[in-house]
Image 1 (spheres, rainbow, N blue to C red):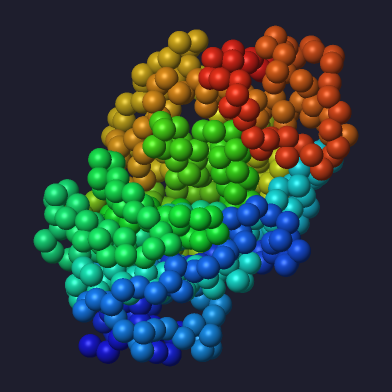
Image 2: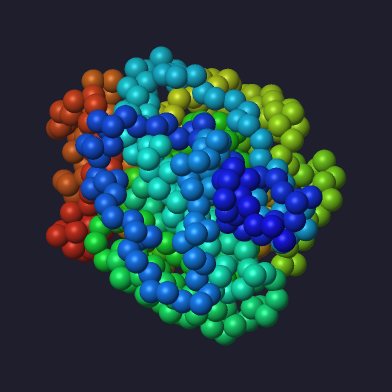
Length: 508
């Protein structure tokens, strides 16, 4: 079978059946604003890439492809399509061509849109958009990522065998990738790797090969829920990745999230800012018992569905429209991708909830809700309203499955159960009960900071007082441009967890 890439002239990343070649994952470049050179130089050091691992000479091995077949990235005539799109396209191959297809964005919120007439939310929206532009990958970053995926996938396939296929997932696929993010890769092995032991054996072979690259090191994580190897640079400035085997449902979950992101640019803007908040505040590390980025984005999608009628449930819509089931590893993975049907469903939901939306947000036209307002209301929703309901965070109707989420904590709080979109009843958060309080404190802090701020950029000082109330008259002056920066201000780990948990924020 001939080896070629859709837009690269000399090499293919994956072996495709010609009659099934079509892209699966949109690169969401419509949501990725290319930052200027000045912006790139002023951002974090992880954006300033140095030597590439593929520039380091790799010892010769019989099964490693020769340099004569390397990809000439510069010769591509269509560099606008990301390699993640092309690699992800192979899912159609090994899933029998049944994977849903991406389409263009349905709608975009107008720039500077205000919720109500409060200029604070307009100011906050501009701050958020400035942050997103600053952290979004440049064209150089995108090209480096493409090269990374091409080179690495070629090595992985040569190690595992001709039938192996590689697909990225996570932020590379759902649109939230930044130059500081790890890259998640799934090696699809059609047969012989259904058990954990078999997958671990394959990962060891891959690790032995990648360990020969002197610029990087291998960190096996075979005890994780899904066995992976972490391949990271010894010095900052180069990309790192997590590699798993037959983690196909994770790939499909990423594609589903990507569909939601492409429906409305506010999903991307708010999602990027929430990821920054969770990361800097120390609650975005699943390995340490806090929230994964995937869980956080599911929380956002649920909020936009349940509280704003801004997004429909693509899975429920597919069932209602009688889409045929698409079974992958015994799980029905169908969801709607028809933009006309989605638009009709959104209009129906908003008309049905017109009075409720007016009562909740002061307007029934959700197009008027800016990204700044949605961010503030997200914190209000999870800190003060949703926390008392005890319901499961889900982006589809799970009532008939009676998922249980009810382990309660001290103080009347509720355990956070975030349902897997495809595997109903499976908690993707797995937040340790001992750390739930820290997540709740951060949600309260975010709500208090944004809801107590006014259009002049002032905010209460409840964060450090330990006795904050709604009647506190003491305020700290912040410039307008610093409200969002205050939100994502790094948590002072020197305080210790006990001091952190003792902080109090007013309950509304």
